[in-house]
Length: 116
Image (cartoon, rainbow, N blue to C red; front, side, top):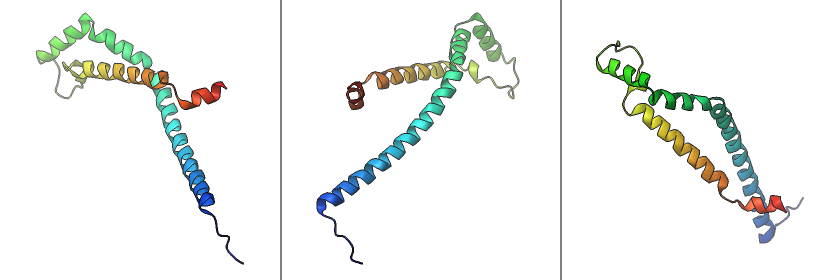
């Protein structure tokens, strides 16, 4: 049986289809991960508000001062009382929110295709 010889155009077409198939698989994987991350984020969204209220409260200041005076054992977890730790976490949260808005506000070529 003789093997079919493909033209340059046919080979280019096969390469393009294979490339796009691979891209579709990678995109699906990325979307699966993103959906899971968004589900987790959405389920925990109230935590950020709670932490913001705590950082702005007199209770945080009292807890911080107690920590500074040595009221807690070294074995007791108290990273939330570090001067920068909680603030940086909340700043990262704001940065992620801005990034999500920017990503989803940017027009995509597919927006026009889907609108037609």
